[in-house]
Length: 291
Ligand SMILES: Cc1cc2nc3c(=O)[nH]c(=O)nc-3n(C[C@H](O)[C@H](O)[C@H](O)COP(=O)(O)OP(=O)(O)OC[C@H]3O[C@@H](n4cnc5c(N)ncnc54)[C@H](O)[C@@H]3O)c2cc1C
Image (cartoon, rainbow, N blue to C red; front, side):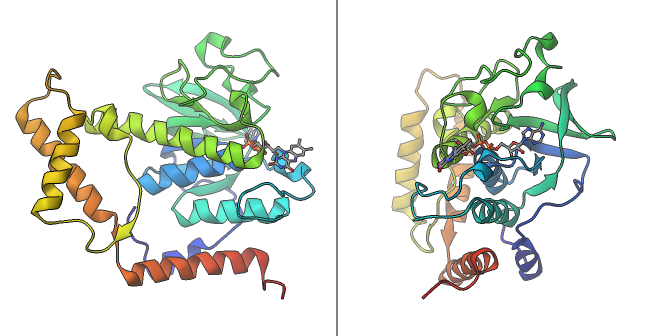
């Protein structure tokens, strides 16, 4: 969650899609830029994973006349909702690209995501967030991943995990999450489980610790001996004594998690800048508020 430079920040208040990915390799490819895919992208990108969203532009949200049940919005038209969500994902550093994914294949321990023409891109994780379409997944699991044209795709609803390592399913495609707010929440939840898995496998964090990240507190809230002792105790409670983790490793985990928490502190100036950018995004999409 590094701070953006002023230039990047202004540039990031963009609400459309780009024509092509800027890289051939990503940590996370989200297929589908509707409610669940864009929410997943916000969460993955905020963790610092290189994230791209590939979207062919047919979100079911477009079929609503006015979304009236998204908490905090008395009513928002579908185009404005999608523009705000894209703007948020882009602001956090995700790329949002216009593209129809035709096929996802295994590529070593990652995936190759193929769009119309070209070699496509490589991604360590794929989040399938395409509501109805799962045909592009047919190359996985010897073609038995799903029956063509059918949805949902088999996945654990709480985490989005599938039995294809690194493939997650979010939103309507997974089954129940129907309605924009519920799908967005599900996308966030699935990205959180992806990040948790990533922290466990890449950073060696026990799952009970890996799941806690991404919040903001006021500068000065954390730090000092009392706070350190409190964090140590909190971590000790989550690493049972019978776990095969050496003392040195536990000490390293404590150091890393304390540094991470110290980074969650925000100065008044950073808070104000973020609030200003939030208003700029709203203005860019909704224009002047009615009297
Ligand atoms: C007629 C109608 C009215 C509705 N009204 C409301 C309402 O008033 N309020 C409400 O809360 N909910 C409403 N809903 C439900 C809401 O639209 C869905 O619950 C929500 O959009 C699901 O989010 P999602 O992210 O799972 O899918 P979507 O928002 O549909 O996003 C899926 C995305 O995946 C993309 N995609 C698909 N296949 C590919 C591919 N191969 N490659 C790249 N991209 C792909 C699509 O273009 C799309 O953008 C309505 C739905 C319908 C059909």
